[in-house]
Image (tube, rainbow, N blue to C red; front, side, top):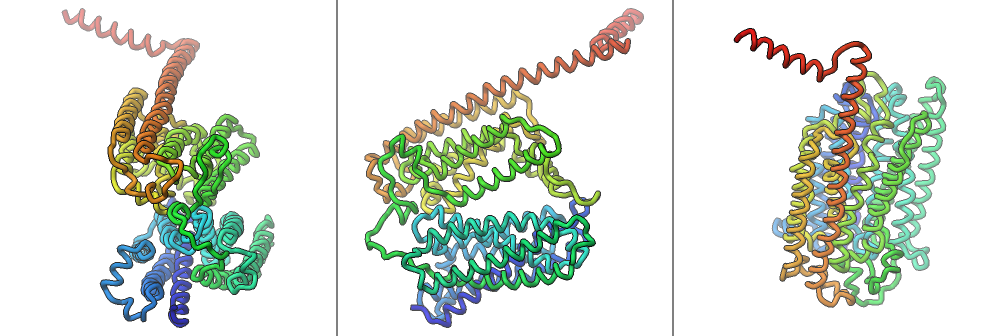
Length: 622
């Protein structure tokens, strides 16, 4: 058993790390999102947040580093001095997953300390905020939620909860540092961010408590009392947020009582710090769960969910194990997409219904391949994993790309609040024309990511390692989806593309993709060794009699399901080519008719006259 003093030190260091990391994100959100920029450059009012980011991230480094030492001493049940042994400490941060995540968090915080002094543009601030959020959520994947059952729901909901709470609390901290004029500019934007964050915090918190806490056995435990106290504080925060929003909805800015607003911000920040302290305690202690049968369950331990029964059509269609992290991303995507459609309709513009239908279909395929029947069975058999892979990488991306989400965003995102401000829409445009995006949309690069990553994943040790962890499995599925979206955006995308390639090049790329994919599938079908490095063997799936035969079946499924979408994309490219030629011919005809109506010769007549003039000159020279 660890000592109370060591437990207290671990909790305090974790609280300081969480608080400083949230303040870091708050400073970056203020610089990149809440305050005004000057054509993408940070203004003098936002540059002072560089100091905030520097000092808060420095405290984060120190707190995270000490938390590694205290956590190691707690795990080994040894004095702190023993945890400082270089060999022991090195083994923890290089060989143990929890130690690796905590060490990466320290490195991320340290990189933010260095980058904060070079931060000059809002785009850089936004990227640093994403980096900080990554550093915050990494240890979540090895928290108590990750060691309990239902990994996908417990861990995913906790990641969403931590991310939303970070943006909410960090934004409140940033508002507290602004003067009255800056609050008037930043408060409406933060109000919108806070509304989305509140919804995510409440929904994800409820889902995580449901998965972690056995209410029948835990109502009289300290853990349950702390959960109830945190719920009370959350309700208080929502009430204060409501008062904020009620104050901000008044149209005339001179009606807003900024003194009262500042007092509310201080109260809200105080309540949030209390909620963070309770959350820190909850993250450091295991919830009281129902008594275990004592039997080892490989499926729950390795895959994070119980072994499903033999797959049938009914079970594949109706079996559902929610992957909260993917579900949260999909809900956010749906909300943003249809908010954009609603904005267009409110101002009298139209949006093709077929695009909305295509988007919904793509979202449905993603959910089916991650949380639905194929997503569940993908954890237990390679053949079903390959089906889910093909849905995520080949089928869903086509529907998402044809729904034109970038075009919708460009038509509905808000402009800058002042003539010199780039704004969110301007940031998207700048990102689309950045050298990095131009590199990604190169058809050769898109093809290399789309097909080349197949060999890098399945014919190395990556596949087995990523299947064994929730973050690895999530990253793998996300890669399949994004790689497919990038490839089909280059080939058949209707959204703006800074490097639009000729149709003939697209056709050549498609034939190359078909050939590479076929070669990969044949290599998989002819393989005489398992590529999962023992992952499926330790599950001992009762309805998979021969793992090698199932792997070869997965190769044949990948071939069939991979070639058909590419063939359809090839047909679509031919159609687009014909349409573009038809449009060009119509344009030339309209130009000719317009010139004729004006009594002017058309382009062809001018060219013929030019040739005739050259011929006359040649005759005179002779």
